[in-house]
Image (cartoon, rainbow, N blue to C red; front, side):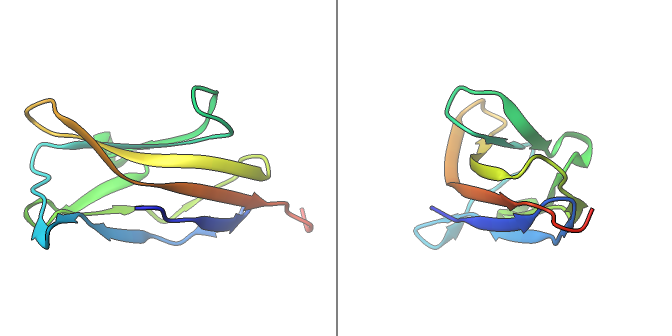
Length: 111
């Protein structure tokens, strides 16, 4: 699923909720680990890295219903166009990436 974001550098990014479903059936996220990174190019340096481990930027909110969120947080990385994806590693070690897109960080005029 392609989902694009636009955000002002240094501002608070409001929480975004997700519900992962395949063929209208919720995907069980019990014991899953979710990661998200912002990069300028595939294989490049990560400018922002979020994970559900210790709720470091991502939180599973209802595992049985496949719900998680990007936490409310200040995003203060250099302005520019980034790509991202959200990778889910399940308890059986299988990995799926259903969410990806562009993440635009606009420059901050008032510093």
